[in-house]
Each structure stands twice: as structure tokens, then as C-alpha cells.
Image (cartoon, rainbow over all chains, first blue to last red; front, top):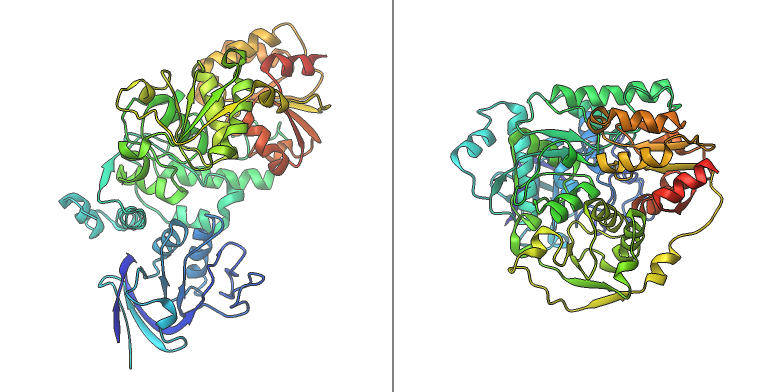
Length: 132
Length: 387
């Protein structure tokens, strides 16, 4: 399967998909040392985003979240790629300064993506693809 | 986005990794905001200047960049006066980290002015495109000067400074600058100094939210407009407002004056913003004082001595060019600090109640300093300090 989207931050990556149906604040929502989601009440609290293709609707919270995404990358705990429904400046800035491929506006809703399966993001081509 | 040949070459890495990254950031943000192209800017103001905000990762990111700003660029206020931080009681460790951040920006070709009033340092003209970050500076540039800027984030403004361009969307486009809500006053002539306009802005910012207001019937000068806009940017998300017949775009026939809703503010409501609560310190210069305001304050404080700590904040360049007024103010025991302000400096955390002459400071002092805030005119501030 392949679906089209809009490239925001260049690059490509393959990894296991992790889908969040809730937005996320990286500042105080993700531990920059471990890549674990620590936001109270977040449906994925305790999950690690490190090395995953992390799909979530959009960012929220402080603009300092951009630097947390950069910190995750420097610590080797960043997502392999980011998929958003609708990119906003905090996540877009973080992904670009951290060098994480990022895509949004997919033809499919996030919930139609194969949660947990291996998927490939090619932000330069603007595609997300997987087996099956 | 449509990029010209040079922009595409920068994005392809022909001008180095830092410029490639900065162009990727501008294009990425432009895509997010639906911009079709970039527009050249004449100056930039970068936020993310405080170590407290950006932390060690932000500092590391800055230190890894290798390029220079191509337009005049200043920084947001930081947590301390760069030269008088000891006198302000700033801990050595904080000062050291703050200096590292400032040094990282200096290496990127950014002028070491940390101010919310860049318009006093670099000539900024009607119709120019800018990439400014601090909310009151953005409001002044758009509203009082008629220049055009969105409110930039830290990395986006830095990218604009290094490339010399910013995505063309939002307030860069004239049709997005039309008023959306009106305000009038029952007694417009009752408004006197900057504190009155600050109180008016404190009231109306929340009502405006993120809409563009137009005021009818009032006749503020530039310092009054500064106070009005700063307060509306604090209690609301107002990045542009108009004053009919006064601000530059509201003197143009092309500005639409019909709005869906006009709210009449009673002067009694403005007066209710003022209180008589006991204070243990006074702070003025939010936004940083103009040369005229420094002169005015010097006249009020001349020959007197303050009995309470009296903080005055202004841009380093404005202080340097108005030395006589600054000396007269300091002779009273008041202190004139550069690079910082009541909102971002930890130096004012030790006070329980602070008197200000600013609607913006009135909004931020309770959360940022953990103190009760009281607004009064400059004359009242001096009276309370010298009583």
C-alpha cells in the first residue's frame, strides 16, 4: 500500500508505526533522555517513540517543544519519522532542526494506517508505504 | 512553494549546511502556513535569547550553526543586564550560561542588543517586511509603523535573519490586515498618559482575542500606542491594530472601517484597572522606554531620591544615546538596566507587590514574578517611590 501526503521535513525512514489519536506536547510530554511519553493522561503514556514512525494529529503546548525534539535526536531517542494530520510550527521546526523526516496531509486518516506494522516514510517524494 | 533559482540552490546545499537547513526551515514553515513564496525582509528580531527558555539543547543547536545574519538583527530581552548582572543579584551560574547563549548569537552575526524596542535602533519604515518575534515589537511594527511582520518563533526568525527572507503569508499580505472588531470610548479625551492606554489595552486585548481591532475617536501619540499595543498583545493575541485617522494604515482610504461589532468601553472600566495596593518595588520600561520617556522620567525624578527599589528598563543603544537623562534618573537611586525587563528577569522575584506603568507588565507580573501588580501613571510611580 502507498498513500500520498505533503513533505514538511526532508529525508526518508522505515520503522514500526506508533499511532496516537491525541495531540502531544513534546515539552514536559516526552522525556528527552529516553524518548518515553510521560504526559499525564496521554493515551500512549509509558510508550517509547524512539526509532518509531510516530503518527499523531498535531503538536500542542510550548514552542520550546521544538528543542525537545532536537534533544531526542541528539540522544539517539527520536522517532525515525513523524506523520501528522496537520503540521504546525512547533513540530515542523523541531523535525527540521533535528533532521527527522516529516509528512502531513495524507490521503488516508491516521486511523487507517497499520498501527504497529513496519512502514516507510519518504518525505521527499511525499509518500508513506507498507506491505499488504 | 515557488522558489527562485538562488533559493533552490540554497535548499540544495550549494551555500553550506547551515543555510540549507535555514532554507528548509523557511520552506517548511511556509508550507505549514500556506505561503506561496518567500519575501525579502529588512530586519529581524530573534526570540529564544534566554537560557532559561531554550536550555542546553537550544544552546547546543545554536553553537552548531555556521552562517551569518544578512539583515540587521537584534535579540529579545534576556534575564539580566549583560554588564550589571551582579548588581541585579543574578547568580553567577545563570549569568555564565546566559553569556554563552548571547555569544552563540554574536557568532551568527546578530547585534548584541536584547530589546523589545528594535524600532528605536534600526530605522523601520512603512511597508517594509520584517521577521520579528517579540509580541509588543510585532504590534508596534505592524500598527504604529505600518511595516509587516507575523509573530515569528525563535528558529524561524533566526532562519529569516540568515537567509534575509521570510514566508509570505498572514500579516505580510495587505488583505489580511483589515480590522475585524471596533472599540470606541464614552469619553475618549479622558485618556491621559501611557498607563491609561496600557489599561485600555489590558481591557480590550482579551475582547479582541486574535482579531484585528480598530479604535475610533482616540488620539494617542507614539508612546501611548506602544503601551496600548503591548497590553493587547499580552491579554490577547493582537499582532496588529488600527486607530482611525492616527495609525498609518488607518489614514489610507483603502482600509475598510466597517466592522461586524463595535464595543463601547466606558472610562470607568479603564479606571477600575487601577488600584491603590501597597507595593515594595516599582518597575517601568515595559516595553523598553523611548528617549522621550527617559527624558520625562528624568524630569520627574530630578532632585528627588527614591525610598523603594525603582527599576527602569531600556535598550542598551537608547541608554547610551541618552546618558544625561539616565544619569539624572540614577542620581535619584533608581537603576536603569539594559537587555532585560520586569517580565523576564529573575531579579524581581523577591518582591511581593510591584507597581508598573504598563498594561503588559500588569498582565505578566503575577505569573512571571509571583507578585501582585499595580498599574499607575509615571507620575504616580514616582510619587509612590519617593513618598
